[in-house]
Length: 115
Image (cartoon, rainbow, N blue to C red; front, side, top):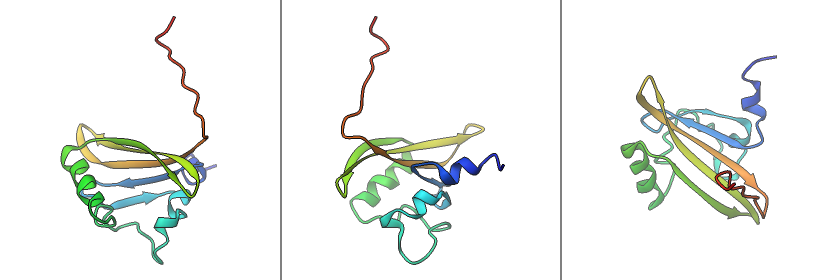
């Protein structure tokens, strides 16, 4: 079994970009998302310019600040977590990984700091 096979079958969308916002990898779930259905493979395209304003400016700032962005949305009646995180290779900003995960209506929260 290919040790990276998990990436393609992971039950969430994973999109990886380089430091310039170019999409370098997408798993099956990411490629199959409704907004990715443009009639061509988005690998090699700029993820920043794929968005309309004002989102484009927000995404551009993420790259400029090498920052992460985490939020939840409801789309088509389903709650989702969007987790966009900068990644660094050998200390150098190398891009952003976006994961979109389905969430149940109620997410349990456990405070591990409480005794």
